[in-house]
Amino acid sequence: MPARPQPEGIVVLGCPRSGTTLLRRLLDAHPAIAAPGETYLLTAAARFLEGETMVDGLEVGVVNGLGFLGFPPDEVIIRLRDFAFAFRREHAAREGKRLWLEKTAVDAFHLETITRLCGDHVHYLCVARHGLDVVCSMQDWVAKSQAYPSELHRFIRETPRPFEAFARAWVEATAAIVAFAESNPDRATLVRYEDLVADPDATMARVLADVGETFDPAAIGRALANRDAKGFSDWKTFASAAIEGASIGRYKRHLSADTASGLAGITGPLLEHLGYEVPNMTSTRDAEALRRRYLAGLALQGLR
Amino acid sequence: MTVTSTDLRSYITGTLNFDLPGVTDADPLFSSGLVDSFAMIDLIMFLETKGGLRIPPADITLDNFDTLDRIVAFMARNAR
Image 1 (tube, rainbow over the protein chains, first blue to last red):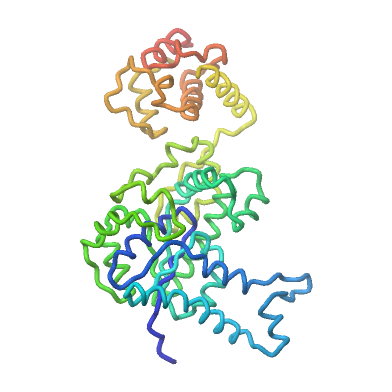
Image 2: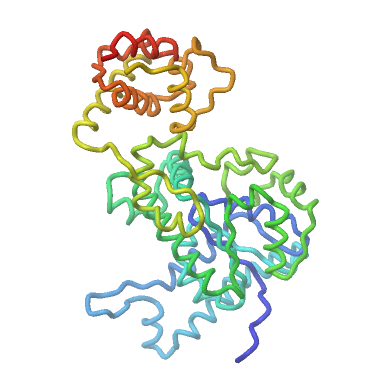
């Protein structure tokens, strides 16, 4: 079996709003890792490679299209990889760093294509966070940006209930990256956001060991003091100069018991697999209870 | 069945996950923004179940529900 190439980069994957930007910022402070804002390089490369499947099963897209011209799929992938990686190699060299790190919010929805493109040339950091906290944060994200990212469109089309759509998106993206991390322990590290927040030193030491680097506790302070976003990034992470756990369990304050209960039916098995608390799935959603809740809500609105 | 301040505090902190640090039984909950409308709806449903009664929308007023004291008094008046 050929030896695995030394990874030249790191790819951070996680459902949007899972803490991937915090992890990126912490790693950018390491003297060997260039981790700027979101470049969309791998998102765009994945979209370039992903075709559409016709009714007879034929995939129509660039890979098969170039295949008809005599370019095998592997060659298309190698050329695209070299094209995409070249930008990051050049940037890392300018920063005087050995490794580059790529993190863009929606990459987790292109996991299969991105891992096909990057192969063993990178180490993957797969970030998971409690699904209902992610749902709350996605609501904030969409409200702030006043738009749904295109990767969420199909979930929104499937249900008119945004929380349910976000929960389904979380399950799909997170289940895929967790399965990938668990089946590729030599080239992927699973990181729970809650563990990163609870014990940043231990978590960062583990992550850096997996990418062949050592942990310097002072780097966390440097990372949080650095407010230079260097491109597209999450607006929220720069609001704080410390790693705070205030948003952990936020769903308990922001979602009604019935909503959390309903979403637990979607997220429960994966939450349990990841060792997270699963909300009580006892619901009071019979027709009479729903009517009474609605009337109580109307009465409360009148008190404002 | 009557409801006590302890019952209410237990439900608000334990089930609704709202902290009540330093909040007295006379402090406003809803009008102050300490407890939001989602939680108030859950609280009212809890009171209906625990008290075995139906609370008409007309009774959902600040006079009846804005403090722990007022909620306890309302439930005592309407106890079955």
